[in-house]
Image (cartoon, rainbow, N blue to C red; front, side, top):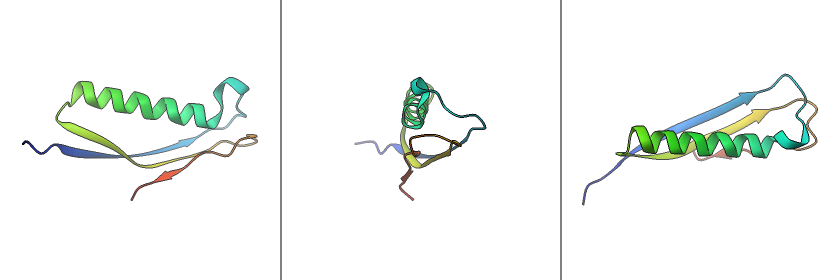
Length: 71
């Protein structure tokens, strides 16, 4: 069985404007995670993607940014 390589990705998002209801922090980060996973699978099929760190800062947001830290 072939061992696949792992690609560890860290994402940090900084926003300068208050989010609207359709672009909540969790939706933005979830969308970014999906885009990165799909892009890597298409371009580098020999890699498995792991999101190592996912964090963000969005001033005046009613919702806290979800964070992931798999380091």
